[in-house]
Image 1 (cartoon, rainbow, N blue to C red):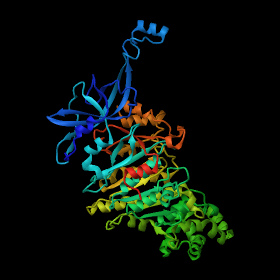
Image 2: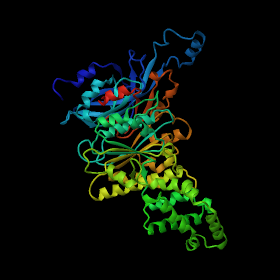
Image 3: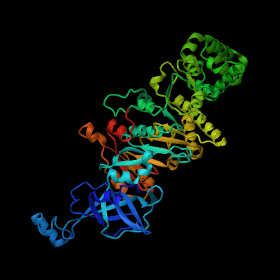
Image 4: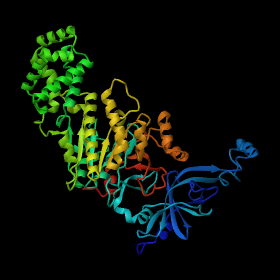
Length: 585
């Protein structure tokens, strides 16, 4: 214990809420609420009590999850009849009320050890009458003093004043490292605050110089915040400015400057484009074969992918398609082959180059402003020799793709290329005895890894399969995945099973979503009852009174090593968040 400080003196100065009652167990304590505390809000409060275990002082912390009112006189049938006539009986109404609470223990600390306090367990039930105290920031600061530099704050204890201490460890070994990757998930309806919470968590990991961060951004929201373009009225978190203060170099790659670098991708994108459709080949095995043959012959003719947008490359491709020997390779029947050849002869090459070939070939052109290939971008991000590894945001939104051939399937193909590159790099680092120490943030995860998919959507299926396999295998490589989704029940079950840390916002309290939540939380019935008390942030009267409530499960806090859920209200102002984590300018 540090000189001049006494944890017991700090606790004695806090408010007493109640005492331990009966029946109580090591999993859930019954509380008898004191008369001085019955008029205050108790549900969600973080509370603490002292007890002796193995001749050492212990301190147990947990949240009050439920409060019940009992009055045995009011339960008597005769008294109920009297109350029905009079409304109340002064001798028993209110005076004989007893308030009983339920408290779930989330952390226990033993006094002693080199750090002053060390984790322990609740191995016995303290005697009835043991005082329950309200936890304050000062008490938490004393107990967690050795870990002060590791703590990060996303908000306050649910409905209370103390800040909830959390920690987000990097994925490598050494100080403040977890030794392996964690997979995380943030779930909640639109407007529940999940995107803002995800950006706060991103900044928590950005504090580590040797940790690389990749954001796959299908909607462009993270890219906008990194550039400092939050819309008016939003929680305008200055993501780019804070990352710069943390020494993190940031780079935003959009569809316009991300260079695709695989012939296989060219085949697949050309297949999706209307190029061959205008030449009378519908989506079929023949079109797939035509794309593969054309790609192979262009590569064999030493045409570079980056030169496909040049007119001479198109002329070579156009001439190949007019060659009868090439036509016979993807059309064996004479009738469709003659139809294709006649269409080819009548077609305007200038129109085909401008309207169908160019928008596809442009995706592979390197001499664009700020252009960087997928391979180069990943090599820059994952460079192990960099003193401070960067943050790379890949903006795949449709708004950035004007003039290019782009749709949801092309987006899926590009994302698969990124995921394949990441997993290959992770395997290489692992063989070299190094941890990749990288977190990949995936926004709109319910679109990329859904539980159900149509049979025809092979591009989306391949992305989902890569994500499912990565969630299973890359943890030991030091590659973690962070999924952000509006829904819980529609995410692929294999991915949900591999997540280690969960954050649940408002909107999962009904139907299939609640059933999926119940399966994850398990038998913590009171925790689910407390979750269902979350109110919609948009039901607030004004912006200042909005509450973004979350339930979290997993090893994300020094107060949750017992595995029980914790509840908090996220900061609703940028200033409070930056000040709590010493991130101000």
